[in-house]
Length: 250
Ligand SMILES: [Zn+2]
Image (cartoon, rainbow, N blue to C red; front, side, top):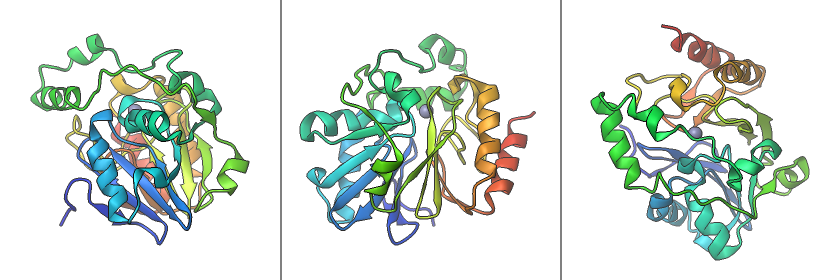
C-alpha cells in the first residue's frame, strides 16, 4: 500500500523520503542533525516539519539544505529555514543566480495556460497556487555546494551535474542512492504515467540537455532512484534512464 502523503519511508539507515502527491523531499539523518535535499512548496511547511518530527528532529536541527534546483516546489520552505534559522542552503554553482532569484527559469503562466484545457493540469494548477507557487522570493544567502561541504554531511552526498530541467540542476548520490530531483522522475500530477520519465517539456529549460543528463546518470553505480516527483524506483540505473528516454518519444 502506498504511504500516506508526507509519511516518511526509510530507503536506507540514513536516507528517508517524504513523498507527497505534489513533490518529494529527502531527509538524511545524522548524529548531529538532519540534512534536507529539497524542501517542498512554501505552503508545505507544516508537512516538512511533520516529516522532521517523525525522526525526532525540529526545524533548528536542520544543519543544511541541498537543492537539486531552485524551482519553487523544491526551494519553497528553504526560504523560511534560511530566514528564520540561518540554515545554510546549497546548490550547484550554475544554479546560484536562480536560487538567489537574479533570474527565474520557471515555466511561464502563459506557457502553462496552453495546457489548462486538460482537467489534470487544471486541478494541479489550482492546488499549487494554494501552496505558494507564485511566490517569487529567492534565497540571497545561497551557497555553492562543494565536495568539501559534502564531506562534512551525513551520507557524504556527492553532486552529479544534471543540467537541462534548469541550467544548474544537479542530482545527488548519497549513501549509494540517487536523488535525482527533476532530472529523472517516476510520475507527476500532470502525467498520466508511472515509471521513469522526463517531466513534460514545458517544464524543462533545455530539453536536449535533459536527455544528455540522462546519459550522465546512466553511468552511475546505483539501483535505487529517489526522484523529485513520483515513487522511489528500484532497478539498474541504466535501465531506468533508458526507459525515461523512450517514454518521452511518442
Ligand atoms: Zn522543477
